[in-house]
Length: 147
Image 1 (cartoon, rainbow, N blue to C red):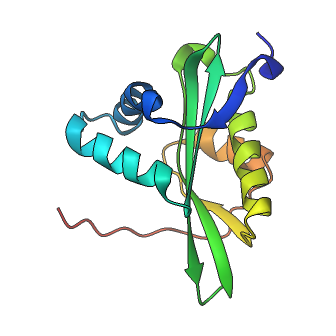
Image 2 (image 1 turned 135 degrees about the horizontal axis):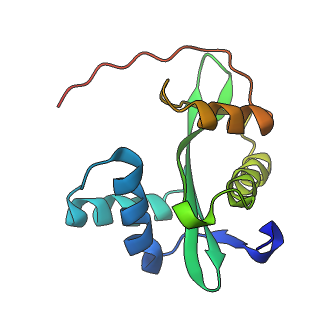
């Protein structure tokens, strides 16, 4: 398989089952499906979100999401990649790169000043991937869970 065989397009309602499975695998948890569907449907309609899927042979093989917000400390719109997942049997074919490039293009077209991404400390291959894609490690992220 070559990376140019994958088609990248905006996520649509019918992509939810695949994206739902990807998110469950990414987070190693099974989320409430009805709640996830509501979130997905809302987000694909929101101009502050960029949801893209990669199709191989008309089947969803990967997914990326990016959320933007206007931040005073940057003086404009900043995007953060929230999720990136490629099906296990479709990895190492350039699909992740295509998805990131689709978000980069969308960001340029929507006057996003900067793209950011956070990745768990244990995901060393993910860190290497984003470095190869031109992201620079400049921050440390702290989280506080309320749930």
